[in-house]
Length: 298
Image 1 (cartoon, rainbow, N blue to C red):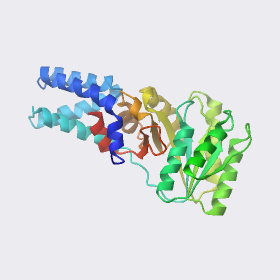
Image 2: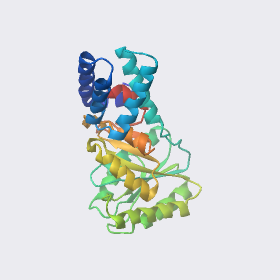
Image 3: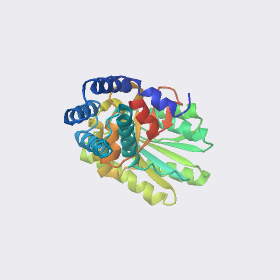
Image 4: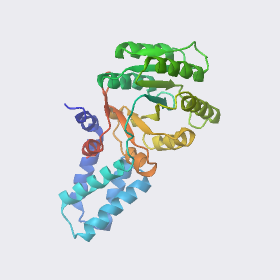
């Protein structure tokens, strides 16, 4: 299976539910008000937001009516095209080197594991990688990151538990500059997106990177659990306000039956999905591909 085939394959649970609902919809309804209302309901039941579902179905309806189309395959293909366009509204930033990537998110989404997989991805691209263990609050977070560093065969900078996370980042950036390291991946403590003081701490770390390594590309990626559903959009909105997100990393894509919130992330918030986790192995993380995601969704 190719890299992008992993995304399509990971969405089996979502595809099974949506495909059956679409089959039943076409079997009982001709194109008309009732059909489009039910199509909206199918999208919403798969965790597409109401706003995005209305916009997408509105576009499908307008084009189908304009072309006087009643063909099931045409409408299905049209829906796929519009959903793919929705995903592509948020452009994935091209990566240049040196690059610093700071990973943020709530507790329990798998940030540290994700960073290990992203490290492996860059190593597979022939890049040198350094991990910064700036999650100094969670017990054994540094140990966990060191395990992933060993697996990916990359360096890690860490301080004692309870240390200032900004100090860890400062030391990591100093080391990266001295050694000409291509990519620095920064782990941060999980935080509730409703806690202002924790968000301010992220802003401080953001300022340290911008000040100390201005010549590096600096990306801020939010790690989201794909099984979270619509709550993921609320999380993304708050983190985006705090640190101006550049993208999303989806974890547990293979564990969700409702992946539709991704369309809302890209369409309403304009935040692209950069990577997707599709399994538990170190190489089960792939660059996101809009076309494969839509094919997997249906």
